[in-house]
Image (cartoon, rainbow over all chains, first blue to last red):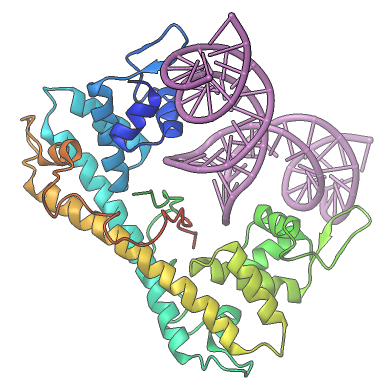
Length: 156
Length: 156
DNA sequence: CTTGACCTTCCCATCATGGGAATCCCTACC
DNA sequence: GGTAGGGATTCCCATGATGGGAAGGTCAAG
């Protein structure tokens, strides 16, 4: 299987397959004389694995770890679960953060007439910070340690 | 006010203030003879505005728009509301997506013994895709148009 | 005049992904 | 054999918002 066939078989773009090769995540089984990457079912399954893991929001770093556990028939499921749970906690935190943003925004939007007049509680909120009140702390409020520069939404 | 003072007054890092200058979002009122940026209360308020808008998850592009409306005393609140509502819909969609990931993951984690044995439903799911079942479609399921390469989590 | 804090610009890195160029290779067809 | 078209290769660049750091100029206090 060349890269195009592996791509169709796995649902991972050729570009990404090359990238996974580059970062050492999934190496082609071999190269042809013309330097074409060659893949077999094993690698294609790994590519599918990655695709699925990405769709669950795991980072490449986490996936590298998961993949090494997957390859290791003697892995303890404890380790897999640990990675999953850490990621889950991360997801939950980010969801809560975004939910707080959405809640604040919805409240502000509901108060906004949305007509031709310039008065707007949304702009008022952005302006003021509204020091006294429940308004100001959408995302920063909790006090969760450092400003997590967390990971983005992955693809499907 | 030089950039350091503006930074302290607004809560925006000097690095970011320079960036906002560079992209034309908030220009310093003037420069000193030594080429130092000079800011006054107006700009500091704009920086605070941006900081607050970022904390609500608005992108820089949306903030540029919001800022121009904010500066325009004759703006129709309709336009502000439109931006906010679009962002809100975006937030809701991303929350739903992450929630689906989290739900799937939680279910898988709950089924995982997390002990020394290698059997692991999490890895099994990643392996199989489990073609028949509610398991497979965490994030891609909905059918919402194109794979939105959406924006990341902002800071507080 | 020196020291230390602060400013300037410029470059690099993040993370996963896509776009595109230049070049080479393979297959099919005439 | 020649050629066309699709597909492979590598390399560079961009994203979005942010941080890190280097090299060099500036200001204020001692």
